[in-house]
Image (cartoon, rainbow, N blue to C red; front, side, top):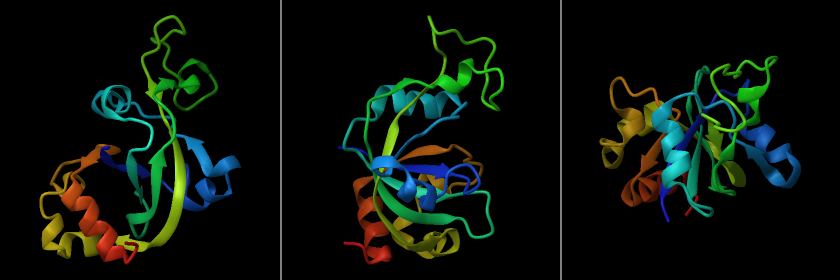
Length: 154
């Protein structure tokens, strides 16, 4: 099993949206970065752990724990001209973009970006590295354990 940090802007899909979704599961649509896409397509597996992270908001940070609930499949928003995520270069015969479904395990208290930066056990975590803007990053087992410990969610 692998562990991941997945960023979502609360206005797009918040932890409360995930909690209110049918079966507490949402498709992780709209990823338009090749490296993040490749993580979903090539490295994520059903059952992998996910840190649900709110980004681009007044207090960014981890707000919940989730699981990858499906293998990667074509993101339908790439084919919809009315979608913000439309990609005219993608076709149903050769989709460029994929997504996975994510299922809520539980909401947590906010573990803020500042709190994460202050934790020495997280010093090498990808999300904390200067210039890292990926919406999906791998999390080591030690980082996962440190975050769960900081959340008091063990």
